[in-house]
Image 1: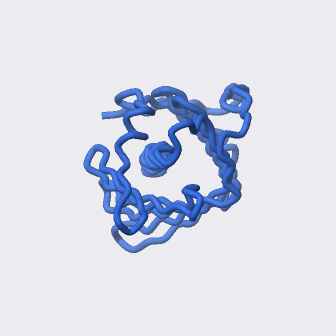
Image 2: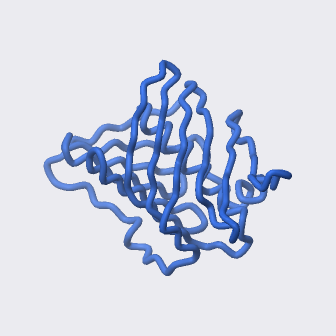
Length: 178
């Protein structure tokens, strides 16, 4: 459940990075995700992310374990092949892509800041305003740093990359959100 919350928050923060380009319709990037829990326990993940306006995201985790997260509108599917499990959930509200984009404000130091549902996000960009890093502390006190590399803005991404069919024989767990 904790990784689900982190992924939702990262999804929101990634959408915020789109505020750096009014005409941005899609993004593809490699990522490294560093998380330090409130207790000081570190975690490190790697993979690739695909995003397409208004609300389609696929996280393809490759390290330390294979995992796929599909987010479309307010539906979330998390496939963990090593557990032979799919978790299904729904976000409380559909993410309003445009509002999130417009909420990030450029600061004098060149970073972008915004606050969504009590969480403050800081976005770092390169000299071409391409997102490089996103930092935030979630409601459970975990600090997340998401580093983006090989960022491609507005690549043509086929909608089928965001589609997922539940494999036969895997356990399906429905997660209720509060």
